[in-house]
Image 1 (cartoon, rainbow, N blue to C red):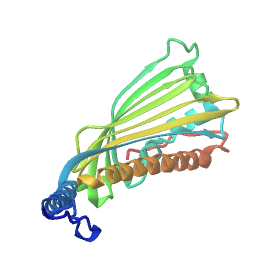
Image 2: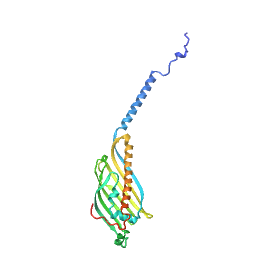
Image 3: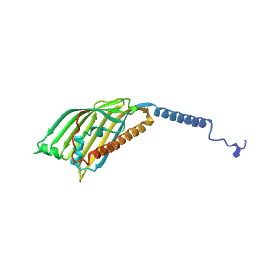
Image 4: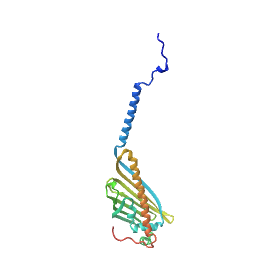
Length: 241
């Protein structure tokens, strides 16, 4: 009977060829899966990128003076002015004046302390300078409600323009001490075609544009009011745009 060879050098490995093949297949599968995910991430998709920005600031003018300047000097251009947008046409569509709460509407209007409620609707056309929007003009409807202690202006796109699917801007102003508190907001939706992996980047770019819009609106409105804040008599602008 032959003796068993227990020499360590003769011991067979427990890791044979089948196991090596399995590991190789697993690595290959992992690489293919990774390549598949990468290819999927690079596939272009149509994505609605949205941005919303709100900014609050204080104007160094009492509310009566602020309201008088905004109405009499036609602040439409200052309100819609923002990054890549400029007013090129405006048309008054409707105007209503409620003097029920004002015993002396004409006298108070002349004094800049009107107690009447004014509602006005305008149709606007603005130019778009961003080539990525693939449109050079945007049509808007603007509704302004002016009350003794508050002003509200709502501006909204009438229809999409190129890749700009929707646009809405608001302005609210009210007294704060001897000054005027103003809040502006911008909300916009832009249709983009980008690889899936860059969707969040596209969202970030549209958000940055919205933030820049409210920043420029603050600057535009502040500068607009400052032009007339020292005038004792703020006279209405004459002529149509």
